[in-house]
Length: 328
Figure 1 (cartoon, helix red, strand yellow):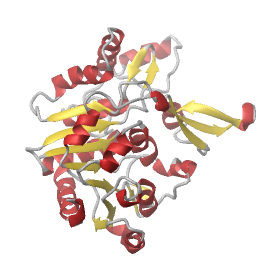
Figure 2 (cartoon, rainbow, N blue to C red):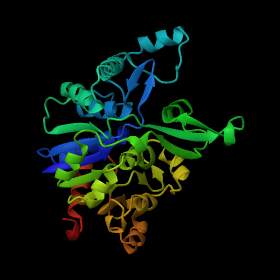
Figure 3 (cartoon, rainbow, N blue to C red):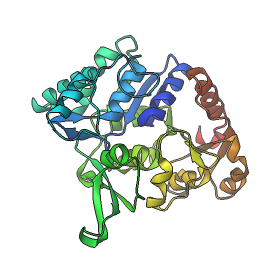
Figure 4 (cartoon, rainbow, N blue to C red):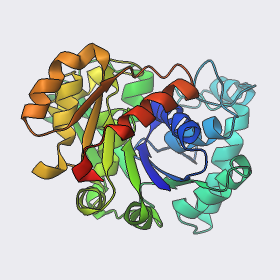
């Protein structure tokens, strides 16, 4: 069985751990968001790829959910002592080695997909059927607009990381844009993985800045919509609030309510030019299921708390069993 997962962030990495627990013998390819990527101190940083790598390679800090276990911060402290910005983005000493390796390999002319293969070879050596792919080998960066009376048009654009990490998603996000997305194409291996898949899962990652960029890479949405594999999406909004992160601060900026049903409609049914064959919502949102079904989007309702890989595996298997026969 060949499974493809679209994912990003801490929640996405936990979801993929559950997919692996549910289908331990499957060929599993994870297409990871790279629009969070940023260059700082001359280093190319790929937060979602690194979180996914460390989590699946059992090197993640279990309390934070990101960064390396056993991390230290002496380089960060020294940079701050020199007064070098940005001081708000923490690069741990162990994590720094990953960024140095990536930057050196990119500078040598290797595409990000090959760089990722070399980095993950260390972490995922005991699971050769698990592959991590960046969504694109091209540079894409999410930017967020905030109000600024001194800026042209009364708004100022910030890199997503500055809005998310330095400002903690304050003030309100007025708009979202993806710099460079129009000129991208799927990374090496992405189109092939989607075409060969028996099952495609959209993780309960942030719909705006994790899943959104993947679907915006030219060719990926069309491949999902026209391919043979059923596509199952999982809500990360439970009872009107995100389980992890601050998606509620970004959804209004793209005109989507902070609601599981609204996100399902945002992704859309394949029958109506969307990407989903099945949308999975938490039991807290069961009342919305009938309305979605009436709109033509098949829905499954179950508990979606990712308390452990085994708990996540259980609801993933239940969801796949709920796929309509027409999608199989």
